[in-house]
Amino acid sequence: MRKTLLMILAISTLSLQAQERFTLKKCVEYGLKNHRNNAIYANRKIAADAQIREALAAYLPQISVSSTLDDNLNLQETTIPAGILGPEETRVAFSQKYSADANARLDQMIFDKSLLTSLKANKYHRKSAELSSVQSQEGIIYNVSNAYFQILIYRQQLNLLRANKESYEKQIEIFGLQVEKGVAIESDLNKVRVDYNNTLSQIRLAESNVQLTENELKYEMGYPIDNSLLIDTALISSMPTLLSPAGNPGFIPSSKTDYQITATNVQLLKIEEDRIRAQGLPVLSGYALYGQIGYGDNIRQSYKDLDPYSAIGLKLSIPLFNFYKRNAQHAQARVERLNAEENLKLDEEKYKLEYQNARTKLSQTQINMESDRRNITLAESTFRLTDLQFQKGVTSLVDWLNTQNSLKEAQNSYLESLYNYFLARLDLEKAAGSLHSFYNSL
Image 1 (cartoon, rainbow, N blue to C red):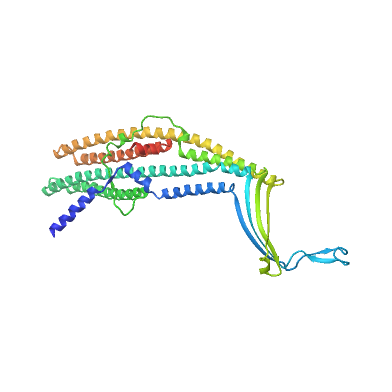
Image 2: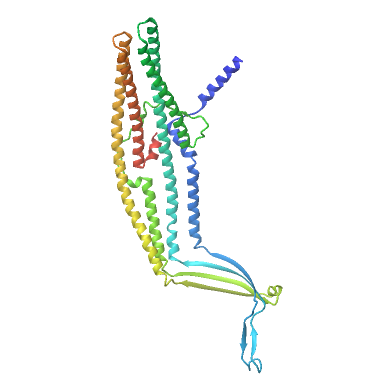
């Protein structure tokens, strides 16, 4: 039995070691490949291609086949004046009870300015679908990175809390012995126990936060929720240096995907405006027709002797009295296009503002993070000295607890400023439209 348990533990250990640990880049890479948004935006590309084929079909030959069978319930008769076929006038019907007709018709559009204008929109529909896919990928990079950074922070917090817990446990053990000997009083021991219990509550909260953010990361990656996910947190100490922005290449609003999508929509609105205007021009088409027709006093006879007929021709359509409706539609399209252009200009200024604010925020959070990192080093040094003095009986329990609490505050401030720095770094990449470059640089 013992050998079996040891074997199971060994196999479990090996399987955990063999399981891949996910760095930030691997998490993003997995998300870009497996997130369900990929299927949605792939379908949008397919829909855009289908829309392009639909537009092209209007200029391709259109072939139709039709067949009719008429039961002439009351045949129309024509009167032939007297003297032509006889001394009296004669009433004649130039048809029979049943008439059958079958024909095939080919129509070919020769010139339609509105259709030709619509064809210009094809490349913009395809571009819009591609940009939407890029925008989705940027969202995946941002959300996966944000969840990953939260896990790093919560795990670092958990490590610090566990170290504080060990410090309290040592003091509780020492004070417990002193209380038994009568050197210390029970109330002092309870003060340490209160802080110890608070730390246990904070550890449970941090463990819960780790689990919640891991589930969030799995969701953003498209990773199975029920499967375990090992996160590589070894680089947390070097992460701020790793994520430092490399200079200022200069911000161009048109490099943002959001800007490009809006600009593409402006082009589509301009094409729609031109298409409506072109509806006032003549439309020329050609056709060819071939069919057979037959008549009879019954249905069978009407299909027995069929006479062929055929024709070719041109059709010119000139719209004359629809200009009121067309002008109203054109005015609406023009206003929509002008508003879209103005919104694009507003977006350009907004993107510049967001970029400058993001740079300022990153600079400030970096200063705060470095300051808090120095402060936590100072707090750790102060606590070690106070702890040593307390063990020698040079300082009081109140000083020891105050120093311990100061260390915890410094740790919390550093973790908060570290996460704010990570988030500001992401926001800068998002504002600059360079999330893909950020991912490639990891």
